[in-house]
Image (cartoon, rainbow, N blue to C red; front, side, top):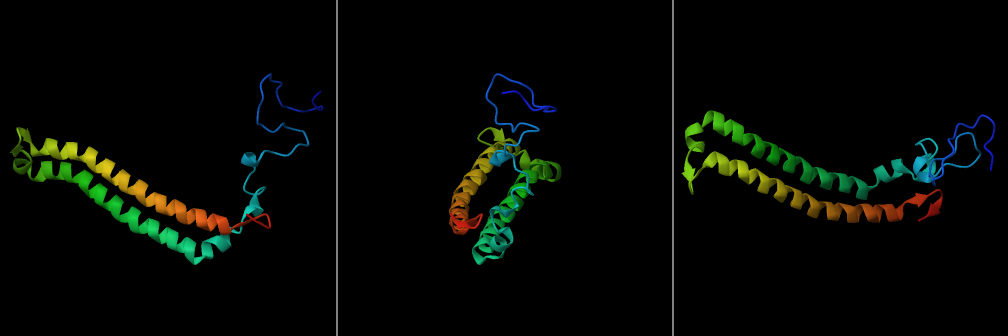
Length: 141
């Protein structure tokens, strides 16, 4: 098949999902811009539902306190080392408290990540229920 005159699409020997330039074929769904894919769902309607607002509130109730907690925990080490060096120099099991506190940050990060994964599973379930109710292009999904 010969390209149309003025077509800038390079000739390649491999399959490609790039929509040819200058040809009348439609773009693949993942290449559509927001304007081209505008009528997929009534996003304003979704945002107005009680279930969606509840989902956002649930995320805020977890994410904000978890973030504040971890930032305070993280910055407590340099603050304590600066303002209470004699306390952070206390030996516990042959190691000073500052080193133990620093190592504990790895475990705390894993604990916060595990708590997030668990909470996100519930959010995913709520999002799935919301998506099931959406109508795509005028058809119930």
